[in-house]
Image (cartoon, rainbow, N blue to C red; front, top):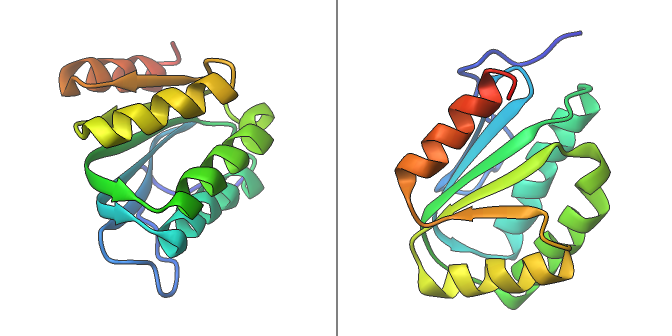
Length: 137
């Protein structure tokens, strides 16, 4: 199976500024978003993960959204719906946040999704969880 290297980044044509996606270890993906998650970026985030699924990866996903300052109503609904539909193809979902607005949105989405999301307001706990997933834990 041809999987991206641990340092590969999304090379999607027209990927929005402030978005990065990579496979950091077999079965572990990391995306990083800076700024506002608008409609286009929400679609890009989902598409990057869908491409990983198409490669046969059932990942632990880590989302460094510590620099996200807001999101559109469309993005909130779209990503929540996408995550619900994609949950059988995911091992786990981890989101790092610093914005109180984002924390509230994650909390509401987590209620809808039955507690599937693990949210972190602490970068070190997020890093430790990602290292554990990378070791197969």
